[in-house]
Structures are given as C-alpha cells and as structure tokens.
Amino acid sequence: MAVSNVIDSGVTGAMNAATGSASSASADLQDSFMTLLVTQLQNQDPMNPMENAEMTSQLAQINTVTGIEKLNDTLAGINGQLDTSQVLQASGLIGQGVLVPGSRVLVGEEGATTPFGVELGQAAEDVQITIRNDSGEVVRTFDSFSLDSGVETFTWDGTMDDGNTAPEGSYTVSIEASSGDDAIDTTALNYALVNGVSLDSDGSPLLDLGGVSEQITLDDIRQIL
Image (tube, rainbow, N blue to C red; front, side, top):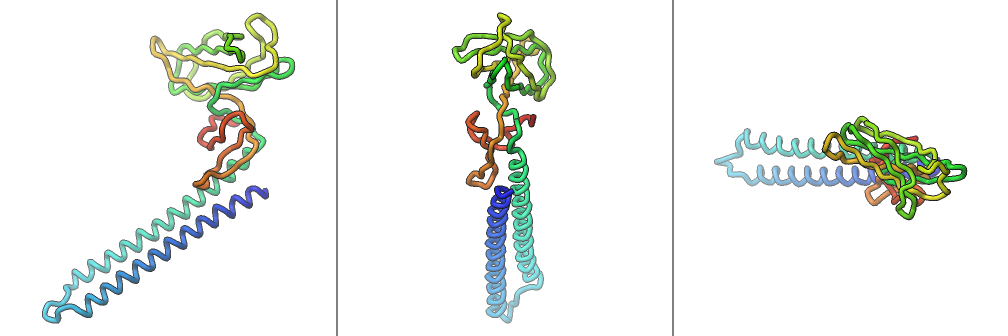
C-alpha cells in the first residue's frame, strides 16, 4: 500500500504540473491575441475600417485555439488517469505468477517443474515441443499435436525420454509449429514471479521478475497464473 501511495503521488503531481503549464501557456496566448486585436482596432484606417466578417474570423480563431488547449488539457488528464490505473494494476501483480516471452523451464525436487507456454498467431496442424538440458542435449520430446491460435499453457512432469526423473536445474524448451508445408511463427513462454514494480522515465510501470528476465511492461504478460 505504501508503494502504491508513493507511485500515485508521483503520477498525480506530474499530471497536475503538466496541466498547470498548459493552462498558463493558453492564457498567455489569449492575452497576446487580444492585445494584437485591440491594437489593430485602435490603429485602423477610419476611412477603411475592419469589416465585421474579418473581426468575427479573428475572434473565431482565438476561440478555436482555446478549444484546442482545453481539449489537450482533458486528454492530458485522461492519460494521467490511465497511467495511474496501470501502476495500480501492476502493483496488484506482486507475488503473482505470469507467463512472459522466454524459454526457461526449472526442475526442482522430485521432478517438480515450472509451467511453460506457447503463443501462436494462427492455428497449427502440427506442434512439436522439445526440452533440452543446459548442455543442449535433448532430454524429452513430446508427440506432435494440433493447436488453435492464441496462448496455451503446458506442464512437464519432469520425466525424461528414458523414463528417469530429470535432475534439478534449468532446462530450455523449444517449440515448432506448422500448418501443411508452412511454418508458423511461435513465441515460447516461461513462468516468472512478479517481485516488484518500478517506474521508467515516462512514468510507465516496469515489473521486476527476480532475474528470470529483464524488467518487462504489462504488455509483455501473456497470461496470469
């Protein structure tokens, strides 16, 4: 909760500062415009005064500028609210498991493993999953199967092709997919635990995955487990 309060204050303060700066600029612009218009009226040729249509046009211009400035202020406020919402959403993921792009599978005691997944842009008739140890040797291959487009999660029981339980450690999963003779782009996904949240230079939230991968954004999350 303390982290969320600090983040909220920082985002809100930045939003208020931006809005105040925009409002000041808009006011200065209006003052300058009106000063020029009054000066023009005071120094016009009495024999050839400014036409009503011309004056109306200039007043319409300043109203247009003012409207655009107000619209910009409104959009800035909306963007600030969206940023705050994203930060709160990210902080709610602390302690949660997620699937993000990556190929690592961990094996623990008695063959317990971390889940993994795949993301397909289109349906595949043939999907082949292979798991290798840290030396690059194949320790487990799975029978091929078909799969719809989207994200799918899998769990390896830790058993190798020879029937033995895989030793504890880190393994790599590779996934190939095809439809007929055409290969399909795949994205392997690995499990990670969200340990914390920080902000980048733009105020957007970054998730700390405890060294499993570099800090990621909310857009990198494919599934929450």
